[in-house]
Length: 314
View 1 (cartoon, rainbow, N blue to C red):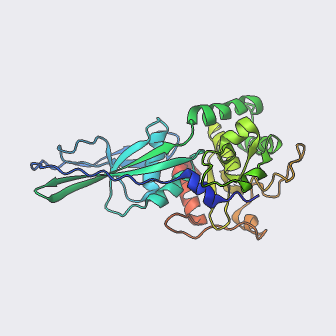
View 2: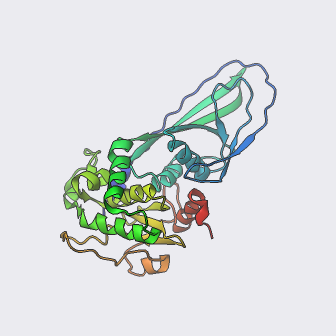
View 3: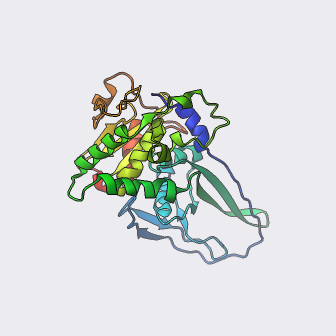
């Protein structure tokens, strides 16, 4: 049931776009940073900082960013309003790959990232260097992810269900409506870059998926019910699963490993259902990546979960 996550990464993709601008500028009065408290679904109550920049800077809403987690959080917040590009300044060296890994843990669809740079100079002296990060979805998010997930909710979720009950319904319906797509393992994924089994669409429309499809579909469904959930990717294991908050604590859930091969329409397994980290790793099959430029450790996933959903922090 391993979904060749390294090949999935090729499909998801990261692109680097550097934009340089040089212009002669006059001195400008210093400005002051301004902070505001976010009120959207992601990072609710988290404070972001608008950088106080000189008046000659043309870009609007330039944020002061400390690290990749904060940049990913800001991008997630903006994506809620279908704003996929953010401008920022940072004293730290920001890793595009690391930022991609954090975003990939929340967004239930494949995407590319574009990093841009704008330099303001005076007489060949660099005054300010701005950067921009743009999320470029590789699917039609509204029609292929959001609407199908909402339709599933209408069919399977009742208004009086608890969070734990909804998680179980999502898990069970994903298993009962999906067959693992073994045919993908025979494809040349360097050529095939938009196969639906890697997306939530594979489940919602075709009833087939590999691990990324299961994990993305679960994340899309959880979001419709405001259930905190992340997608955990293991490059060393070439697999993906979910980290889910049950209302009390974060647990691990592997829908893919709970779906038997060959597929049986009436069978639902709970071997990898809502386990703590020790339980989840006890099978000897699952393993997390170490922290790296394009990989996240178990601790980094959990810390990011707390930042995306601050209400879940102990």
